[in-house]
Length: 261
Picture 1 (cartoon, rainbow, N blue to C red):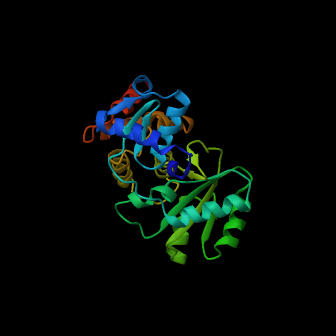
Picture 2: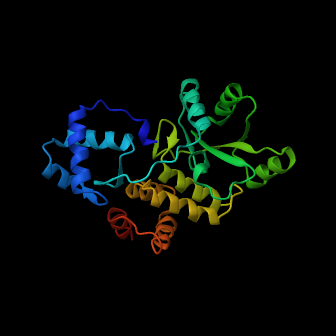
Picture 3: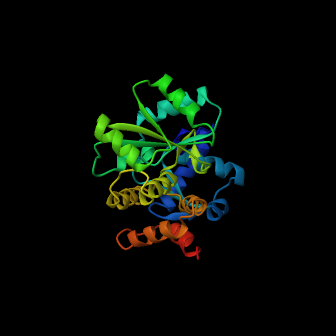
């Protein structure tokens, strides 16, 4: 997630930017253009300072060029996922991404009997990842490109309450350090559930997306770009607009959706 990136920032610069945002933009969205006009920074420096605020969980990027001070705390992704991701990066050079419930499990309202952690791996590498995980955590159950029925069989027969599913594909946009951002993880979870790839309550998709919206964990530009890549543009857009009847979308997010035909 974005909080893992680190930049060396001069504290006085950071304090000046944060002070301006807290005084002038509390509970408001602000554009990069307005900030560059109001503050004595070059573009590259301002990007650097804004990124540092995002990493420290003090600001959020709503859409391309639109920022807002963060009002809520981020719920951390499962620690075991972070540790396994770090170990896999050292063991294998192929691309991978922990996504879907690997990232979003803390937002699940109805805790399932079995947790399905999803890993997307570069085509032709799933066996390598399965072998690596087996060496790192021998007790974990790992399935390669399973159908929903395969997962259900393991749940019902083996009584496993934690399953790692590896799927080979090339959908690696929207990740950091091998872990998907919450917004792109949701797009993957939506695909997995709506295409009947994993056992999961479809009603919980709406609750998870509500939490992401309320906690300012969505970069709408990134989310819709990835939804387009996964051929889910219309479905994700309609899902967001449906929820906007109950939760006010940020202006920047609404602008992104309105530009999509």
